[in-house]
Amino acid sequence: MKNLGKIILHIPAREGSKRVPRKNMRDMNGKPMISYAIESSIKANITKDIYINTDSYEIINYTKLNYPSFKIYKRDDYLASDKVQSDEFNYDIIRNLQADTLIMINPVCPLITPNDIRNAFELYKKSDCDTLITSTSTQMQTFCEKEPVNIDLNVPLAPSQDNKVITTLNWAITIWDATKFKKRMEQKGYASLGENRLLFDIDAIHAVKVSEEKDFLLAELIINVRKGK
Image (cartoon, rainbow, N blue to C red; front, side, top):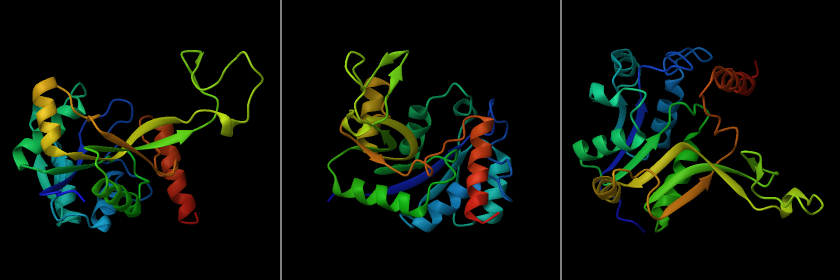
């Protein structure tokens, strides 16, 4: 069992977004999209050190008004551009809050549940990994740049269950050993994928990631279906 030390959970949320404007604060079935990640993080009850990591005063004010248990981490403006890598803002919060374990909940995955967060945390805690990243897997026939990845084109088509498993990272939930993340970042200039990583599959519906308008509409539709609308 790991010694997790000071556990920081944060939700990184920039103000700007090019493909889906203002998506974090855009109304999704009656409340801003970011509220789903906030509420799941609170209900997961992993740590009391839970933060919104943002440059947006709109997000800050909304969070303070509606979720007083959430703390605010106001990131510097240079960490708010669309060219900034997640390595950089995760390193920034680790360094300034002296985290030993960092949990990142992605606000663009509004369908993740408190159980997803708890299950990821329990698995991380019991493992020897330094990095846990949520993912989804398939054995369906997969191509990359028109080249087969998990099938042989020179033999008859095999049942999909015989194919190699293809795993895609969705980053809905990520957990790091913050000390190792910081050291890797300072030595190599990158750290997000870790050295000893554990990929944790979650339900593909929970993993829906809002990158484009169609993703937003899909996530909202699923929420409406869940509510019987």
